[in-house]
Image (tube, rainbow, N blue to C red; front, side, top):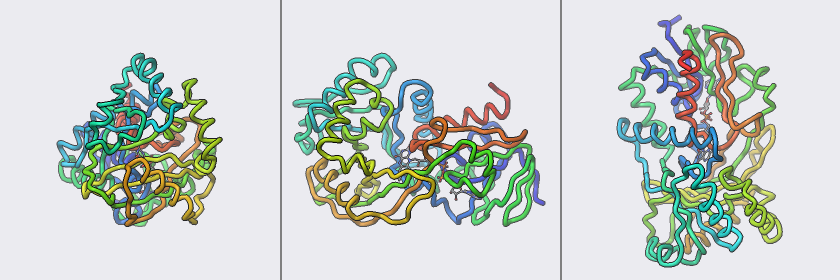
Length: 377
Ligand SMILES: Cc1cc2nc3c(=O)[nH]c(=O)nc-3n(C[C@H](O)[C@H](O)[C@H](O)COP(=O)(O)OP(=O)(O)OC[C@H]3O[C@@H](n4cnc5c(N)ncnc54)[C@H](O)[C@@H]3O)c2cc1C
């Protein structure tokens, strides 16, 4: 038995760290348990795009806007590298352009998305004309870009140093019960326990999690060097993302975009491919992604999927890229809503994402969960 804490958290991904921050800044004594020596889950395998623009109107948009403020605070206090120039979403076809026009004229105004649609000279001015071959660019002014594999460890250091959060790495939590946690480093007690175990649905609280019927999504990812001088400072997307992201996907104009994808490039639909490109601080690019859903992630990456994504990236950027690294990411997907906060017993909570936007909404979601736990709301 070690010192009694107010809150024990399982998982040092973005959800675990966000809950640790929300609790520690309220003065709670917090410990975080992580089975690996450094986080290796979805939170370090992603693009690091903290997107407001893609979120559907309603709670997700509100959470993304509030998370944006928290990321800004963390960047200042913890010294995270955060690009706040926004994103560019390129319309490559007439159908994509019409969808962006409709979004800007309607939903964006109604729900306060901060966006501008660039065409003609304004589009030509971007990066010295590099993107002039597209029809239009939606500039999402509130979107942010992190480099997750550096940001997550930096956040951990700062939480430990400045807020007194205790971390137990290389420590598997085997079981939790109200007020008590059993791990490979012994038993620990606290008033509250929150499980933030990502897409591991089997080790802890398997029954209440199974009742949500969650799935996982596996994604193929690449890091590449552009073969032209390109000092990219924005997150990039294309119209392909419009059938994936809730801000656009239910607009009437999205049907024509989806129909064109099915007609002309059905392999993109079949493999859930929609192009995202994120700059790294070293001037390289993270390129992805594909989406394959199921109960368990297949370990076998298809080279053809990577080739399709590289082709899309080279068209979008207007230059060749040289791949330097490949990996697979897995995130929790397809539960009863975009996320869950379960309370299976007094003093026990489970925070899970069911869609791939934990970096965008996680920080504010944790604030809400911790406030709920402390009955502030
Ligand atoms: C390839 C990819 C790209 C993505 N791109 C984006 C993006 O650009 N923007 C965005 O908003 N979202 C993105 N996402 C989604 C986002 O990364 C996830 O929603 C988010 O990281 C989930 O955070 P988490 O803390 O729940 O899970 P994780 O980061 O997976 O963390 C869970 C942690 O719990 C630990 N753990 C589990 N069980 C135990 C146990 N019993 N004992 C101890 N430790 C345990 C695991 O080791 C792990 O470190 C992407 C995801 C992927 C995979």
